[in-house]
View (spheres, rainbow, N blue to C red):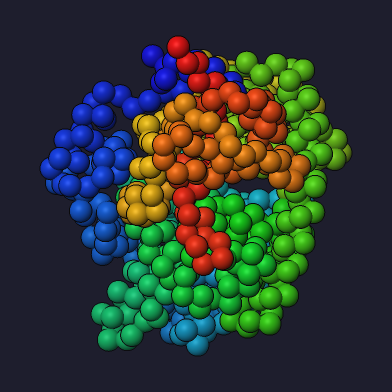
Length: 582
C-alpha cells in the first residue's frame, strides 16, 4: 500500500512508508531509551536494537577495525613493503585515475614521506592507456624500481604483472577477482574469489589503510615507531564516499572519524579543494561525494590523469592551490561535455526502449571520461542497469552502473571470459569494459540476457522510500543534529527521508537553470525553507512554482543551513504530491 495514498508523485514515483515492524520497533526504542522517535525510526530501519543504540551512535574505530591479517597475503604485503623501506629500495605506486586510486596512492606517499622515503607515482592516461596496469608501463617501471604497488587496480592484470620483470609487485585492490590471480608477490583484495567476503564493502583506500595498520604493527614488533595513522583517515573517508562504498561496519567508522580529521584542515590538497569548492561548513559525506570527489576525478576524466593523486599527496599549499584551481576548471568542462553526451545517450536509449533488462547507448567520439557519470544519471532515471560506450575507430570503451540486487561486475567479467569483450571487470554496482565495434550488438544482447537472469528487467520505477511524517514545529536544528548522529549517510545507509503532509507553499522561486527554492508551512508551525535541485528536469519544478494555492505533501531530507552565522532547518526537497483534501 502506498504512503499517504501517493501512487504517482509529481516525479512519477510511488511513495512507500516504513513497515509496521519498523514503526513498532522505533516506538518501543523511543520509550526505552528516551531518544527522539524519528531517530529511533532511523536506527530501527538500520537493524539497531535499543541495547545497541548508544554504541551505534558513538562508533569507535578500535572496536570495528578488523584484523588486517584476516585478509590473505596481508602479512606478506606489509613485510615486503617494510623490507623495501629498510633497504632504501626504489618504490613505484601504480594507481587508478579515480578518487579511490588517488587517495590510495596519497595514503602510501604520506606514510612513506613521514618515514623519510620517496616514491614514484604513476597514473595511466584514461584514453591512451585505459584502466589498470598495462605491459609497457609495468615493464618500464620495473627497470627503475624494486617494488611496484598497484592500488585500486591489478587484480585481473595477468600480462602486465608478468611484464614487470626484475621488480616485485604487490596488489592492493577491491575489484572482483577472477578464477586465477596474476603472478604478483601478494594480492590483497577482500573480493578475491577465495576470500570470505566479510570485508567486501571496503574500497581500495580501506585496503591500503589496513595494510598500513599491519605495517605499523610489524614496526612496533621491531621496536620502531610508525607514522600516525589516524591523521590519514580524511583520505580514507574521501575515497570511501566518492567510490560509493557501503557506509556499513568499519566503513561507517572510517568515514565518521575521517570527517573529523578533515575538519582540522591540515592536508593542503583537501583544504585547497574545499576552498575552491566554496565549502563554508564542516565537511559531511555530501561534500565528499558531490563537491570534492567530482573535482578530484576531473583530472582523470578529461585532463591530466595524475592531477588528483598529486593534489591529495602534496604537502605544499601553493602547489595545492594551483592544482585545485585547475581541477575546478576541468570539472566545469567535464559538466559541459557530460550534458551533451547525456542528451544524446538518453535519446538513443529511449529509442531502443527503457524497459529491457539492460539500457545501453553507444556514440561516436563520446568522451570516455564522462560515460560512467552519464550511465549513472540514466540509471537513476530508469531504475535499470545502464552501459554507455564511446566509440573510437574499431573499438569502444564503456562504463556501466547497476541497481541494487543486480551484480553488473560479475556479468561483465563473464562476458569478457566468453570473448565478447576485449576486457572488462568491476564490482556489483559499477563496471568498465572495452568492446570491438563489430561485437557491440551481440555483446550487449548477451549482457542483457545475463542481467535478465538476475531479475534486472522486473524492476518498475524506483519507489520513494520514506521514514515517516513530521510537522514543521517538530523539525528543529536539535532534532537534525541527533539524527545526524546515526550517520554518516550514503550508499547502503540512506539518510532518513520525511514527509511534511498537506503543506501550503508561501514562496517559490526558480534558481539557476533547473533548481527551485520554496518555503512552506502547515499554518500552525514555523515556515520551513526548501531547496530542490534539478526540479525543472521533471514536472516537480513547474507544478510547485505555479502552485495556485494548492496544498502539497512534500518529501525530502532534513539538513541544517548555515548562513550569516545563523543555523536554520532546511528541507532538501526530493519529491511532492498533491494533497487531495476531502
